[in-house]
Image 1 (cartoon, rainbow, N blue to C red):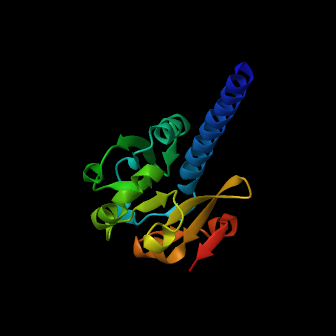
Image 2 (tube, rainbow, N blue to C red; image 1 turned 90 degrees about the vertical axis):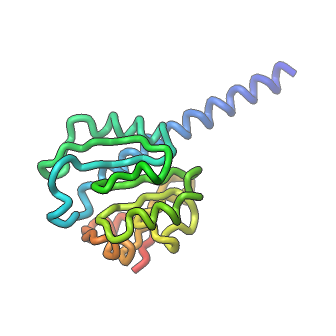
Length: 170
């Protein structure tokens, strides 16, 4: 019995550490996406807002990573939200956590025709309107990119990002 308990403790701590690593990588990816997209001039005033819907640990990582950072001349502000109704008019990047995928349709309605980079982490969401979608492939975090969804949101994609993506949908 003690042996089983020991094995359970070891495996649970491994999964907690790997989950924390995953969130750190997602935070780094999301921050770095600010360098590979160009927002319209109308979105280059005020703070650069990144909102995280339903994933507190990704929010925590992003808040640490972006502290005192700029996008162009804009100060980055990271916000945690709990429902699509809290999405700001002037949000630049919206990260929709895995467990919040049920809100995708409402989220898409709210950000329609706005220059918002929608980032998700659930299989098949590029086909439902996401611009960037995280997937696990070959044991590591990769991202898919939809150029047409980016264009529909009024965003220009740097070709270097296209080359870094695991897969690209035109």
